[in-house]
Length: 410
Image (cartoon, rainbow, N blue to C red; front, side):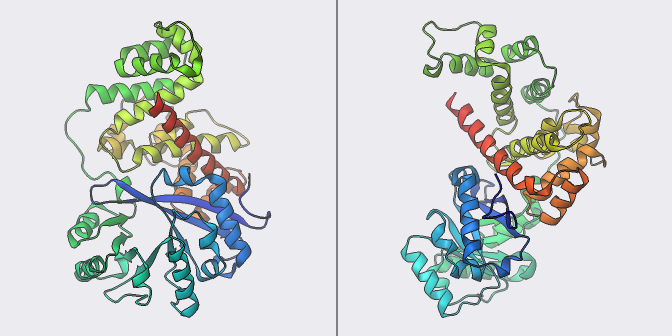
């Protein structure tokens, strides 16, 4: 599957969480690029390409039930992209758009159709004062707005019934200052950086989950090993037995043997489920979406390695899965992965050392952040056709979403 109406226009799509002050996912910002033509030059056909690309992935894998924010240029807005997208999306106006009569009329039409709108702002003066009565959100670029003006801007927007979104929040200190100033939502990469290093030992239960993740994703893992590790965890054991005794299997007699249950489920299915459950256990109490991001990275790294002409070893699923362990465990990466029997290249890559595994991870992270040029350069280094990246990411999103739903239903 290639996103676009023809091979000359590829749509690269990724997403970034928008968090509330308690670090809970409120929504997702869609990051995208239409190529190779510059986005500013696209017309109605490009509006259709964007909408078809979003729908081809599926709104639910992209949004996970949260609002999906999509930025539109003037060409896309007036080309009709807004009305081609699902009405649950939040339509953001690019900060270069002039609020002339055509733009105002289109926004009025979209509001009449039930769409929510967002505008951008830098500094204490509204960039689109004529549009403020029509919008529900305003994103404020903190890098272009003086810190002394943050509270004024947030208060003014909130007084109009507009939720202010702090944009480009890159560390915990800026996040705390933005929240104190009154911003109701935050967007940036502060949430995927470890901020507090704990001195206490990792609890035994979390350590068990880490070891389980490692054992499950070894290429040579045996049924005996899986049975032993699953049996040691009461919660996992109950979920496996509950799954195999569900109506979906149509079994007439209750299965009580763990080995019998694992055989019926299949090793591949057990590995997927247990990986999700183990990651959920590690990230218990963390609503920021880091666990979901780890799963998407894991699948992307695995897919990307499968596309390479030559593979050097294994462990690429674990590479992505463990890439945020320092954030999840709130420890430096060398301590977070210290007890994991990771393949040496993966271990070194997670510590930031340059090798093939690190190139794979960097390529995935660049794509995830909408750093398209760096992502495609990484794909070239791996001898992977760059046009595969949008499909790899989209498939990983769907896989992670389906796996999460499957585990929750078990």
